[in-house]
Image 1 (cartoon, rainbow over the protein chains, first blue to last red):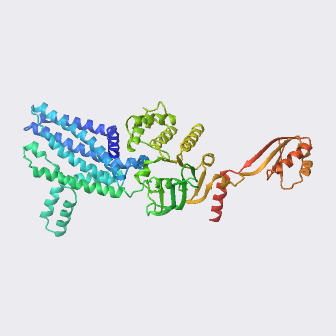
Image 2 (cartoon, rainbow over the protein chains, first blue to last red):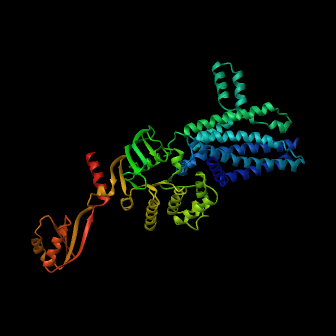
Image 3 (cartoon, each protein chain N blue to C red):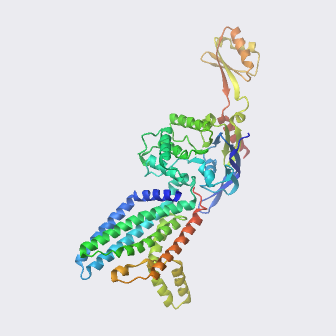
Length: 254
Length: 318
């Protein structure tokens, strides 16, 4: 009950946020733009539109998740709204979980909206209804959930600005992770090898959530891959939420 | 006392770390007090005395560094005792994107309240705090006084047995302050316990049955206002007489007491006497001289004098 109440209130808070609207309008415009972009290019028009649409779902989704995610907790502390909340029968874990679920719902709505627009543009451009775009966007959504959890984790102990920098870095490194591993494998120096591989294993490999090839090149995805993806998500999610809770449960709100 | 303790605080300590080098600052230096069932308890002290820190500890917003506190005999943060407690933070800020009724609904839901019963409670609370007709106004458009009122409404949403109010009268105009005082009294009549802080002595004096005076993180006094002020509660009596202004020396002789002081003001002679029994002495003398007594006023000791006296003592000792 408490978690649901906080989640719905967070959903309402974020959905009434002007930043969300400006980002969303911009994202939809960008996706729409791909319709004209494909006209200018030579070759596989459909692939360009799909690629562009998914890139927008991914990048704008990440921006929304991180920039709203870092404010979820810090705003409550800064505006002291947390005082009256935490004095009610709400545990700090319920508070964190409610905040996470609320933004997850908002990001779900925006991801769905951007995906629908992308499918629509593809349909208008090529006449094909590419429904397989949705599961690919679904995998992106899992990644966005991890980014929200990471933003909450960082903002549980540092300032919003630093949290944004950390979360964005995690997003970028997470996608360069396979290169990091490759570099580690090839490195001659044992130190470089160890450092690169340690970083690779410590930070999440966000490329695990990249299923774009399914829709772009018709690559088949087996159950094992999907299971790995969900397992990977569950593991990192549990780590991030537990760490956030451990830090948050001892914190004084001055 | 015989009544059950509602808030028990024992040797509570809090250290905040400030600045780049995290220099420790002792905000609470081991305070103890007990609030009993169905009493109005005032928590008095100048700004920075540690009142808000204590209240934050009671509401699990910050954690103590020493000592212990219990509410309804349970450790702090216990969900069962939280269900029976209402809290108004100092300078309350709430979700400004919510309307008054949305916000109260949110608070009610956190206590597991819903449906018709909750809607009725919201309606009655809004009228109780004088915000009827404002239910659909977003909190961002609320004035400071209105925020204070909605803050009180949210503190009462769960019909709590214990109400903790941090500076409930701040930001209110004189009429608003009076209304809040009436509200606090009516809570007591309904059998509730009220614990409130204030740096305004008159508010505490008018309301509280017992007070705890805090200064620099230490308790300087605790007890019934009555006991703190002294059993009599009167410093001296003022007897004002007319028609004797020309005969002050004669009056002095008739009264025959050296320890009384005489003050002349606008043709009225004011005699200050230390004891109740001395009043008659002055009245008789005035009548004998053909004058009239126009007033007998007891000059009461107030909490402010106690406050200044105790704090002054502390500083001199320090």
